[in-house]
Length: 258
Image (cartoon, rainbow, N blue to C red; front, side, top):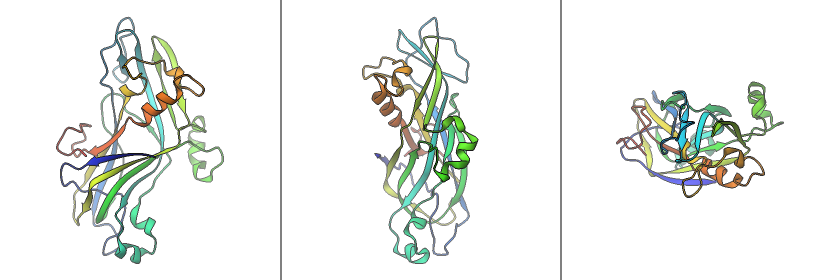
């Protein structure tokens, strides 16, 4: 499990599910959005041209163009601090503390935009962890049955990234199956009547296929059995971050960032 500590800069309030004194939502909502970033060095000729919807990365010698980045996410959860009153009301600690969804196929926007995936009710309570799973799609798990039917090419995979490296097409795939967990410091206090709030999960595309010295790596070398399989897998796993983003600009330097 990958755990990071996130600090709330303002008293922004959001939650995925919980229980209040009345046992139901209090009329507020929160949206969960996704964005990508690519802030690498300028690409070098002759492979510099790319459509606006793609991300072009360079290291002065090599050029990488990412044309699609797909991830399977499951069990996106916001967990609440133990609440005895809530536990007693519902008789199930998990129902009080977590909201789960998925699996979903996240097709990252590559043009710098922020894509809102879904909006859910907000309830009162105190929350201290955000978690989601990078999910390898099972070939027989009943919970994945509908997803398999909709996306048969993603069976036994959790991510697929496509593009070109120095002009040659590549497909990178991984079966990484791992929880990503973020501590909310201080815990998040949800009050009645909170208006709609947005949280963005951003992915740093520039970090995917780079060596420790910043040089680009051939994505094909990260496929199963490749010399850079572990390095590239870990780079991608560590490239996610989450932050409050009420204006949906994908900028974690704003005052609403975690």
